[in-house]
Figure 1: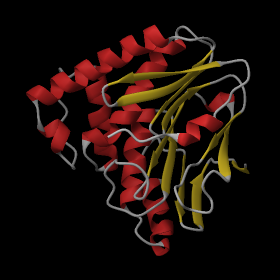
Figure 2: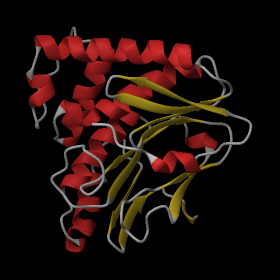
Figure 3: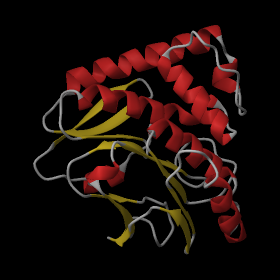
Figure 4: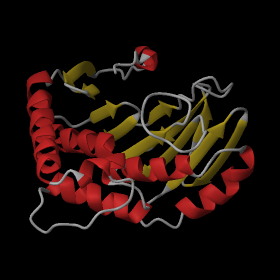
Length: 240
């Protein structure tokens, strides 16, 4: 089911072009030095082919809510999803949005000095300037009131966000936003799912952040639930 992504109307990066690429359920908002719709669409089609073909031969990849064994001959995007989901103790499809954003971002990075790929709140960034990424947290009073300032030297970077109150992605928690930063958007997506699953009340925030910081590769995490906010790691939180 398509959900109108109103937060995209607030996205602007001076000197760069933004465009949307949609293929089946995949809906990307991309920013680069010029319009690469054709190249991005080709990359989405390739990524989806690998994922859909793998699901056809191994349906457990699609349905499992737990990690599954890594097959040595699987395509790289599948290996990345299984590796990330295993590190975070979630099913491999928990990383699918970040994996597609990362694959498309890496393809476009060969063409554009700066690339931002957003896939339903999961983001791949490779930039040469400071970028502020706003946090959309549904009906929380903090939604789109705070953001994360990203320094170019920390990119390529993945930002994953899971929510128990916004969108259609599966979450067993009730966080308005559970956001994770990692060098890999695939890992950030899987970790954000795991983080969101741990938070049902404000009392869960501290323990959830304590658990997620033990996942190798995670550099920072943030949770919003109502008017409560918790954060850990290398985050530069700014007011919007």
